[in-house]
Length: 406
Image (spheres, rainbow, N blue to C red):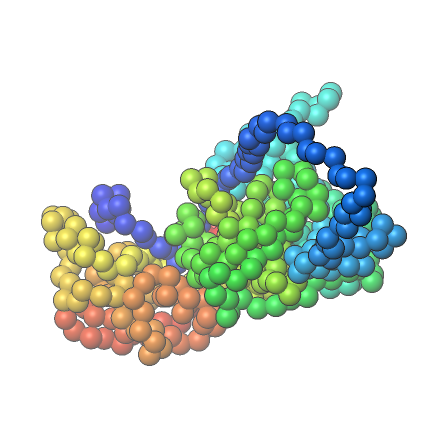
């Protein structure tokens, strides 16, 4: 079956999730101003009254503090949320370049040799935001991955030693705590009802440029991890054209009211002007578990699956290694069942086509993953499959995702 998978150019999703998503990006701006030929203007007649200047919209006197009258809603949102957005500096000494380190980590961390020391010192800068006034901060897991020290810098210049409370690579969320009180905090909004075309505002520290504000729109919602380029992430991403660069990771994505709707995470290497954010509901749910327990347990079935597309059906028919028969042309095809897993114990087989979970129709692997993520470990899930034309309902009880799969 492994050879079969390699022969297909189709997306496969594994509920035994691994780590390693490579994303990077850059932004370049160019401007050109056409030259103009200077022209002499006639002097006004001495008898003519002086010209009156037209009023300027939102004009304010020099004595008015800049923070008193923001020019627009973007400035207002940035002014309100900016103090709660932090810079996170992480570092760790290494004796040699780590083997098998995730591309996320390599993109985030630079490398430099510390004077007089045999090992290199890997350093990186990311962003985060304060969700509780007593020092709870959330950021991306790849921002603090493997770091021995974390330094948190507020917009007002205060610095704190941060403690990494927990990291969840599966969703790329991390929780950091600092000893402080009365910190500025963000206001959490929601992403459930986002519509493409709405305003989106990103705040962070891209490329070491602290407190950078960019704006754009929501380009799309519900992007699966496979579409974004990382099939091992259990996240439905928000897509935006607000500029997100290395260093923005972990910073907030805001709506036009200055509410946090997502956590900026990365941009694709082959994309121009496209960024992605983890929905705030997901980030907050994972962060709450990290702050309370230090870890997150994800429901796990133990199957490898793919969308049953016409192209997949054609390849199955033409491949002599195919050992099962398909009787439907829609659903989610199970390619492999891992041994010693809830799926194998329940009797699921390669070739089964999942059509419903707990009575809810599913047509894509991402929809199956959502149903599994929404379940509770140990609870019975009713999985309806079509096996060579026969409809079966199989009960499966998810277990916790093994740590080796995180």
